[in-house]
Image 1 (cartoon, rainbow, N blue to C red):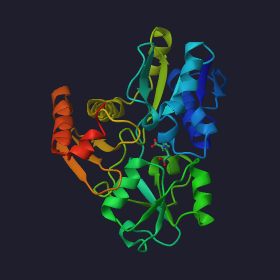
Image 2: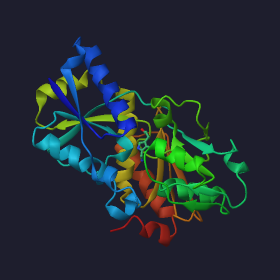
Image 3: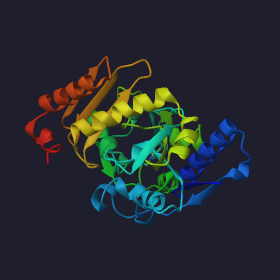
Image 4: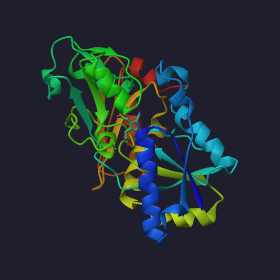
Length: 299
Ligand SMILES: NCc1[nH]cc(CCC(=O)O)c1CC(=O)O
């Protein structure tokens, strides 16, 4: 039996089931061949403070990675967007499911166009990227912190804690909510690196599991997400930095970095995603940025 670890949020459990189903289909296993083990992460426990303040992305994965190390689980399923760029040598991302819609969707109580939000509208988001992109396009908006899983955020919107929010289309679609919100063109809101991708992590020395998992890898997704994560690594920075990047399946990558208040946005692109192109793209973004923006990526 394969023990599959996941966070316990509705989205995480849905993604875990997608991986379990893909494995069963690829190997002709019956449903009970994969056991789903839900593990609470620090990110799930601490709901009242912005992620960037309490320790960043590792809070979503630390407990799952500890469970991999001590054998409580054999594989861990993650939203790749939440996985830190730096990886210990003892673990590996062995496969990704086919990527979903990479766009953000605008969810607002009475508006379906970001540029038509009322002057001074309150935008609920705790994502430094979304906040910076929003303020870049609409400096009048007021950003209010907004954490919690997708359903929590939608109910906060209904009760008026904010006038609008931005959510990943991928998460809404996987939760069976394709009707919620309006997709925003990537020119306005370039997605986060790895948005819409689900990855499977295992112990780096587990060759048996690696071969099983390889059977469900979507190579174009792994390549595109690998390029976006390579750019993130080349830029440095932290979960407080506002970075967006999207590598198209047709090759090429577009990226932007922003000051948190949206007053500066640097955009650059390359036609190729080889190592030199990624390095070059990071150098161009940082080289064009003001000293204040560049400083957010140093040290
Ligand atoms: N930061 C939380 C998170 N991590 C992954 C997703 C959505 C699914 C995905 O992008 O793969 C979300 C919710 C959101 O940003 O709306």
